[in-house]
Length: 127
Image (tube, rainbow, N blue to C red):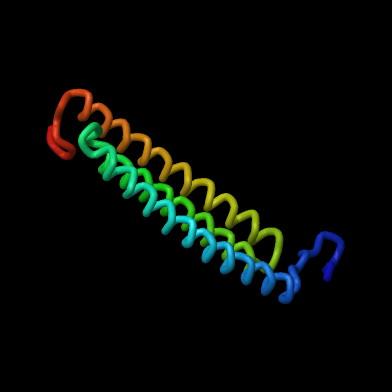
């Protein structure tokens, strides 16, 4: 498995296969969880509709962010499971962190704008 004095450590195909299967199973379990969470959120929104005018839009936005972030994490895990060496893992890790930092910045800015609009009594999307 080790090649040369500074060689590349290769991850065995069997280990990658087990990792890929684990990611698929985790993704399925997460999807079941998200379905249940969405149903619960919908029920909560129905009960609170009269009190929280912007709650539905905000919770949908937050759920959307959560789904995208988790999907990105599963995609990252899948790519890691297929990685052939440590260098590829390091590259994937760096790319993932950069992409998630960009996504988080955009999400925080978007939610901040929505909160500011709500505080001013503006309709979302209007300025």
